[in-house]
Length: 401
Image 1: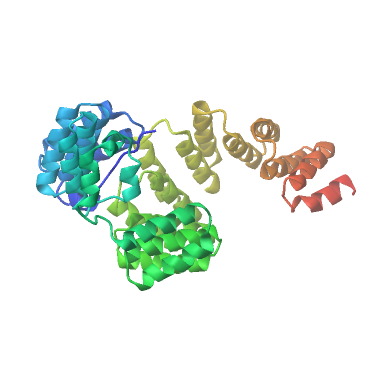
Image 2 (image 1 turned 90 degrees about the vertical axis):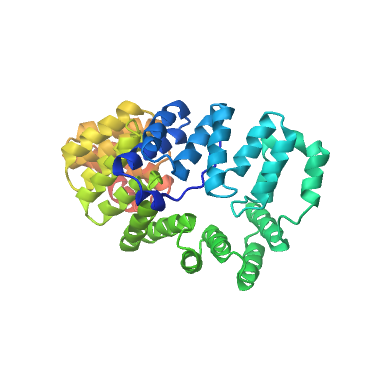
């Protein structure tokens, strides 16, 4: 899988570009996420036509040209970017020149990158396949000897993150707290502290670390996303709504969070806004089964069962291998008292996911509506077997034991 390197500040160009240009750019970004770079270029050209000095637009055009192996065009784009923001395009220029076997130029641009504030972690450079061939050369060794590109604290953080990947969470917390006390990259350190506490299921400590991280740098979108997800887990939808709106204002290409926004609005019973958020996502991903499923859940929560049914049907027409889509449509049939259709969908869902306790439990309730106590008994036993403890009372009542 290709990794897109994006360095972007959408908040800036929202103030200098027209809405149609922003929409064209966002459409390009959505196409880039699914690696449709040719199509993305068409939309980027539309955006750039009226914004020929926009660094973010041209940076992303450079990325498309890079992945399409149009290296001359990519070089021109990243050189333009570097003139406006020193070092922003240098890593990509180094990767291109390395691919073209221009070792001296590759080292030159890598040096520029290491001297800039766009510098990525050392391990990411060392693991980059584009630079593998260079590592045996004298110029590569000289580059790493000529300067201390990464401070001892930079290297310590990388060691800590390695321990974090190995699950050494208590040691990680202690060492991260030490870095935080030394005021080293507080927004990033507190982000990692929060992630570690979440791995330990300590939501309170994670929330405190996220508040510190975001206070240290309001542009830390990763911490903001973590706080949204944490507030969703806690059921604090008002706070989640506030953060999600802020995230999408600053980074409107965080497309997944249009779906999250829809889920939040639905929980707050702001159904029109919920539908609007999911429809925004569908503008960029019109064939997304998960978006139609999300839309169906919003209509279901709003008791608009016909609209919910249409959305679940659309989701299943795109992907009929997802158990939750059948389950959700089954719940909708059950809500409209169309019990036999509900049983059919629950059975389809269980064919795909036979160990889901919620599906077995819902099927048991619908079996009761059809006065099929034998089937209900079997369904409730299965639900209890797979962890739905609420089903135990039904087992005792219906099955007689």
